[in-house]
Image (cartoon, rainbow, N blue to C red):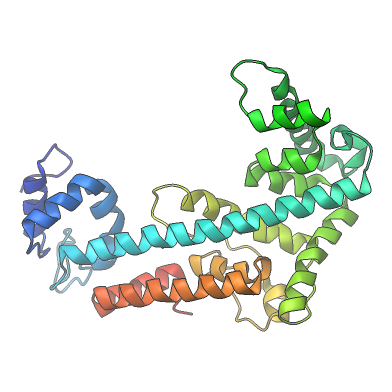
Length: 319
């Protein structure tokens, strides 16, 4: 049997899949899909739920597909995962905007002098945060300097704001920070500000659902979960079975929200979908939930039951 690690035409790739038990009934359609999507991204990325692992049926542990598995089943999972990435990314960007807005507002409210965000004394006095604090200050300072370059300006919007107002405040600069940098910024500001920002999220949730309390360290944990998912969602990487290597501790918050243990701290796609309820408006979360359910229902109708159950376990939704 030819090994697909060597170069193979699309026709040869499909022949290899058929030799492994995959039903490729529409060769022309399958070739068009491989031409657009790439064999590695489609097959290697999404084959696992469809492989035969029963030693009685596959005693030598070869790469074999379960009986009845079709090429369209892999395509259905690939499509589900792509749509899941787009859906999650859209909502995670809303959360990103939300946390940036709150961090910039509360910091600027407390420290009102010009460029107060460049003064180390306005941050946490805990020495373990000083290195990250200095990195954040350096990043903000470099963003300000960028407007002075008259050629090849990386962020023209900063220069335009400075030319008009002769100042670039934090609520402008924060828009040019990554979520990771914003997460570090939240980590190194003083504890009262951290508590206030966590309370802002809790108050918004309380107004639309029921009263809750959110600790600053719990918002830290939420950010640690959300950050890698935001990056995964922004790239063509397999998302549905991604999870953090180690669960994040959010047991107390799960209890306060009457959620089962691991619902939030499991750091699965399911965990992220539940965490979004804490940081999105009720309308946005309702729309997100409706679309997510539609994606899951479409997948369930498109593949075999055993594969669907395995995929739901990987996402965490089986809970």
